[in-house]
Image (cartoon, rainbow, N blue to C red; front, side, top):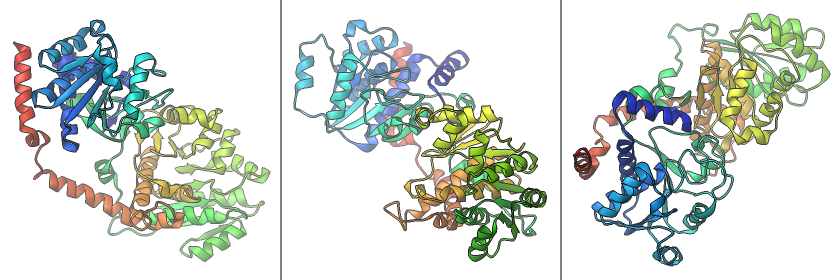
Length: 535
């Protein structure tokens, strides 16, 4: 499923109107229906308040209030502006809503302050104050109403985006709604995956507003990874495979201080399906690997032979992982300056190798960068706070600056290449422990060794890595206590679980009632409303 910015969504809606005759009212009615249907699945409120702003988001709310009223619900609408200030389609929806008998209160009504001061609670609130075009902190009456919503002990459903949260960055610069559920219309938006938007949205779903698949399947330049993508991209191993045809990975990692980095990277590669994992490291690294992974051939490095030995071993490999635990000494800098530009195999560049890339080291021609936010800040010559303020932009900037795919670690890991951004929703707090990034490096290395393009290998690796963390929660329900080796060891179980779940969903799809079949009354309502409109 594609993820679109506010501007990209406007373009989809513009094309829907020009190419398919789907106008603003069609979209507004469909958005209202999707909100009501979502709420009906989760709560049966006795009394609902719909808070509406001046724009199309408010128009969606007014239409939803009318639908609720016509199905017997007790519903009030609270406008943030006088009704005389409404324009365009929101004004049309206001008139139709009033005609349907819904009580609509605006700031110039005597009952307005009394309603807001009332101690009587609404069972449910629809937040339709601000939409995807809102920027900066909410002000005036809208800010006041957001505070009111947030103080209410009610079920809160936000329309398209929680009010106060910016659509593209997910940032909230002032007060904002904390929703129980967000129904975002047509396609997911970036706020669902970064900054305050992640927490403000609560559970989220995509509301069908009748946009043609031809438009939604090609919209924007970001892709949300899911079980179907994972299933269709999943690697396999031929029945006649051998250790070399299955993929050979060279791991250049570890140091006297961090010998385990090489162990974890190699284990990640093996558990992800590499046929052979060769580790190149100093004597203490080789001793650690030999003790924990006797399956690994070793290339013992000294300062005198390191460059030639690694380049020679790389010639025999299908992919290279370089950087975890190497350290940042002058000798490591000299080694990487000589080795990195001469590696001619697909490479994962991670950790300490990224430190020296930020200092000017030349990258291999075919590689993927895998920084966390601090490393990304160093690579982009900015701050971690700035990276965090818009992770989508940061991931894209990395890919553009270095002309290589980049994986930005963190909640909702992002993988960017020159044309597409993959958003990985998998993972949890289990990954917040030392060494899990090394395991991810090994997983991606294994996928590269099987012939996957760097961006795809990184995206698949991130999804698989996150799935393993989620799989571990059955044994670590508090989401801590697992270690990096546990994540590597869980990979086989996780991929089987994800693939089986997708097959089960396919099989269940044939027998599952369509959403509209579960709400026949809304189908009847649609026909009635649109006939009335057309007449």
